Length: 223
Image (cartoon, rainbow, N blue to C red; front, side, top):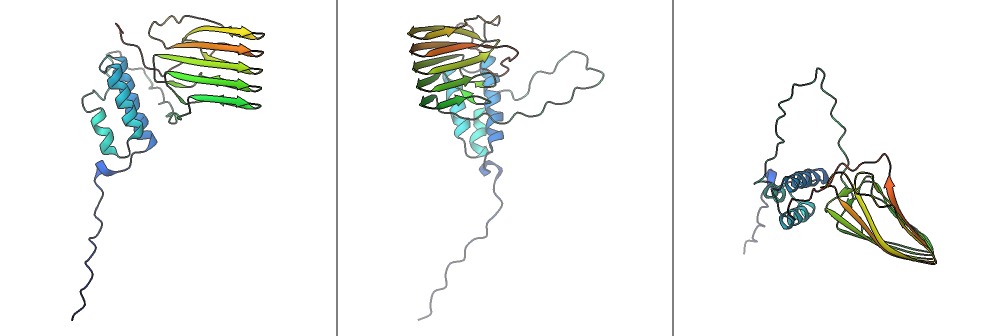
């Protein structure tokens, strides 16, 4: 009996553009368009949240395309006279990191700083240790951020951009709970709320002068 020959393996063809793997820059570009659309009132809170989550979990370019298909992808053309010499294009920012929403320091230290994505909730726990949260360069993805803090024989230090609203409600038991409140002149600027307690420890939250937030999701009117 003649031995059957193995079936030929088809040659690999070119990969369709929709099947190409998406990069971090691709996902961040789509997320920025979604933030702009939300700021302009084109998306509801639920639609923005769903599409942002889908953008950061997309694996291919084809998964990113439907997220902005019904949105304008170009900014309006300015009617102002162009400058004599165009300003050089700013260097592109690196993609924002994803960090765990909870920072814990027990007999040690923990920090959240630099360019990272901030959702609606953060938590800091310091027990015989210290936690530093610096939102100066963070990318806000929620109109309001609540930071819950617990400091027991430890300290929590929080810094925010000078153009956001900062509010605080907390208690200091044989310790200090100091929040330097401020209200932003921009009614659509993010709101950062600090709440919690310090027991034989300290919580300090204040604006970082000279640092202004440039990326955030603006709250819609009537919300």
